[in-house]
Amino acid sequence: MLEINDLTLKYGESQILNGISLTAKRGEVTAVMGTNGVGKTSLLKAIAGRHPFASGTITVDAKPLGSNAPVNAAKAGIGYVPQGREVFPMMTVTENLETGFACLAGSGHTVPDHIYNLFPVLREMSNRRGGDLSGGQQQQLAIARALIAKPKVLLLDEPTEGIQPNIIKHIGDVIATLREQGEIAIVLVEQYFDFAFDLGDRFVAMNRGSVTLDQPSSKVTRSELLELVSV
Ligand SMILES: Nc1ncnc2c1ncn2[C@@H]1O[C@H](COP(=O)(O)OP(=O)(O)OP(=O)(O)O)[C@@H](O)[C@H]1O
Image (cartoon, rainbow, N blue to C red; front, side):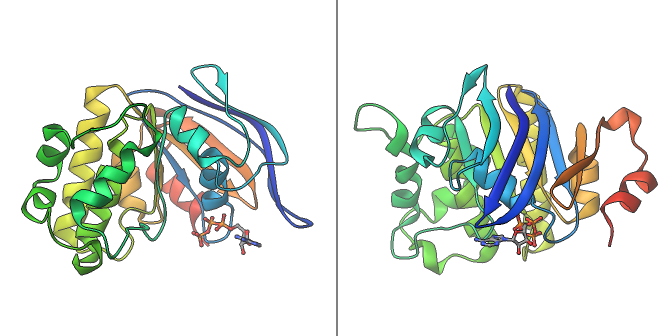
């Protein structure tokens, strides 16, 4: 379980997160929503160790994460799929996937079948360069790479952005499968409202670096949430 308590984050003198607290449980999709610039990506970057937080705590299964150390976050069980995917364009699909092993001890790891079963297109394209894949295929590769190290928490930053509808549907199905397997806490940052609304077990709405709503799906109506996260 991921627990965030009173987290603040700054870029220089600008405070962007003003005391964020939230909990994401295994086997649940926690959807973090809000308009452009409210701090959703910054929150994920803090959890993933990509940007230092100024104060507050982040724990995974009660163990605190340090600030600004991506490899330590990965070792602690954080899988991060950044906005824009960050696929290595000159490396093959298999090589991209193998970078996911970097935070694991030992060597000689091979990509497990269950990863290819979730994303069959990656098996077909295993020798193609990352940069030659379509946006949707790259998104699947980025999610698969994050799953390689068997994370306890999966952070997804706008996985539907710029992706064609049939692949959006497939990514939604994969997220639902991961939820059913019950081993990962999924934190979904998403601007595509209905995608997030259909998948979310818990909704966290943000505005100007603060949480304005944090409720299970049973206690939030579509119109209430839509009003909170619309411009
Ligand atoms: N590296 C940075 N340096 C300075 N300011 C930044 C930096 N990254 C983001 N910001 C600012 O921090 C605020 C929050 O940005 P962030 O990307 O976290 O928001 P967001 O909710 O994810 O928005 P979006 O949906 O557009 O990605 C914005 O005002 C943004 O301009």
